[in-house]
Picture 1 (cartoon, rainbow over the protein chains, first blue to last red):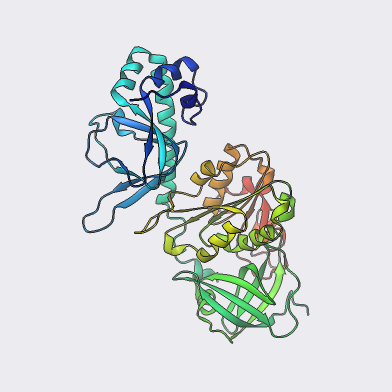
Picture 2: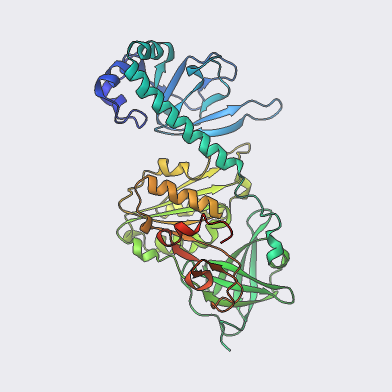
Length: 160
Length: 271
């Protein structure tokens, strides 16, 4: 696999501000990849080993439903990280992911990243905090969607 | 009596169904029309014999006022079900406006949630009519589902006229190829220049609050964020007090207000 250029990796929104020596270490585990339209990055239930830092295009997280088209849970775009499941047991994808059009990303080799983090705890901390921040933002957005803000205002018409 | 307190008769020239519960009406004056409006202002629409409701003006079509109405109660249901040729009463225009011209030389950022696009449509059309005055026009639209997008057929024309339009839905349906997620997530994707942005937001109040907060987190100054607030507007002339929000009477001091002015009020319970 081609290694990512450290400068390119450092420019990604997810890693912005990370010390240069940490990015240099990470670049050994990352490869720039092109994702053709329709390319599936992973499937629900598959072994979660990698993650992607999206640099262009859109990727949909989806869920297959028998007899229907895949349900799209969320779309991710440039600057987003794709894949949390590689971080913790059972290391299994909970959703699938598909490029909605031509896209590109840095693909990170999960086991190699984890080995790096074990060897360099400060890098591990930096990475964990970034993953946490991304997960928190994703969680907050999901909670907002649960509010169903655009639903018909039940009973509000009574005030007319 | 003026047209501020006495409804002018308007005839429904045409009617367009936007979604299963939302309709756009073009209203043609029968007698003396109401005064000239500015984008963001509203009228009181009267379904004769039923009642009056505040409805934002979405734009003009020739001599016609264009107003988009969601059926949520007796009056709005009557207006949504009214046929072309039928008469309605119109009072107004009332309230404050978006002040679109303040974005001249800057980035105009419009963020709409659900039917909140209706009060913003007039501001967008005004900006697109003088596209060269604005460095950039960004439109971020959130809807519950692709079927519940209002003005969906106009989006291509807005893009062709020079707006960067991003649309997201909470729930995708088959065939949807756009974004799925909340409208606040589009702020990241839009790549706005926070120092140059003037943001106009309209939608459910919680959505506006969260959007304003997200814009601030991206570096947009609260003073450069405007919201359109809704309360129980009745008289339209700041006499009855039904639309009071703290020190504001929104029919006069709103609906368009600065985020700086209202941020402390938006989280006060029972206000």
